[in-house]
Length: 421
Ligand code: AMP
Ligand code: GLY
Image 1 (tube, rainbow, N blue to C red):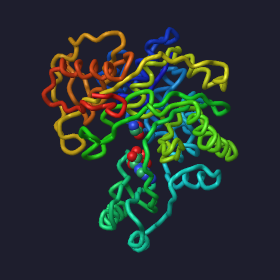
Image 2: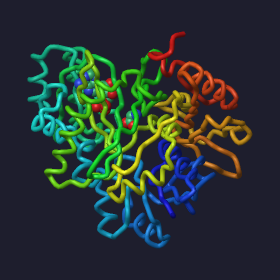
Image 3: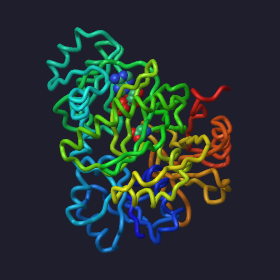
Image 4: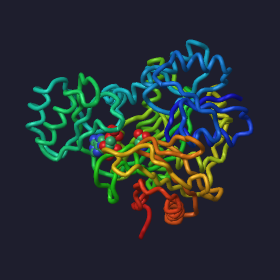
């Protein structure tokens, strides 16, 4: 098969690697890919917003299956666009992608289907928002409605925090904002819960926990993710049943009633409190860096899994997982998520030896004259599998120390909630 992957992060490199390991694959393209994907696939420089150019490429190169990694093209309707041109693509349609593209869309489903979530109020201008927020109890959460690359969420301790959030959202910090959402602050422990869905039946696609803050101890600014571990320590069959019955099934049922078509991953961001799940948000794709921890422990041929999904035959296969713990530590550019330098050589990356239960997934890297250079905030994802989280993390950190990159920053405490020091 000839397969294309759209995206350029660590998630897409890990998808590329898993596909590369399948015997069913003849050729892989990454659009646009990164330095890592260029080692196992052919990178194609097309802007992922340019659906026309992507579709021409896929047609001209007789691609059998295209996988969309990031949310933006999904929310913008790439699946509908390509399907109209008879191109096979793995990902939800534009209607279903509103689950991630509009927090209000999701909240309305929660209301209709009685899905447990934080209480909320929708406001659509500065004046009403501030008037409402003045009389509330804190902490509470203020969110921009649309896609904001994980950054449009403010946890507000008092009215002055909330005022700042309202100003920034309506001043257009996250793109033109028509609405904002005020939410009850949920306390508890977070869990990323994944399913794979073929529009008829679904399978749980493991759980993980990411670490969004830039510094150890979960302090500092929010990032795209500084590391993750899989599985979540909260996973057990009783909780899983509640998540499926109270959250996943009613959501999929609603989408079906509305005639949406959903073939792809669905990622539920949950808060678990007293062993009860609450939905914080949906993402219509795999998580990054969660994907980098989950795919390496999948035992199935991933292309087989995807093909079954495309044919509506997911129910026929059984997913098998290695009985291992998986830890991903992100090596980022110093200064990220604020100002950082790009274009810095990572000198000895080619020479690093890794064992067969370790992976270096690239994110912001590019290759020039046979050398790897940094090209983004999050640069490398160092993933190790082992019998327990502690030894898996140690293996990842030992490996990072061998990478001779002076411009790097990483968190040594990934998984601290599941690792006793
Ligand atoms: P989101 O982009 O909606 O996932 O929000 C980013 C992060 O903000 C989440 O991972 C949570 O840590 C936090 N968060 C969002 N909504 C709430 C809430 N209602 N209560 C507590 N924390 C929240
Ligand atoms: N790990 C968070 C995300 O992918 O949105």
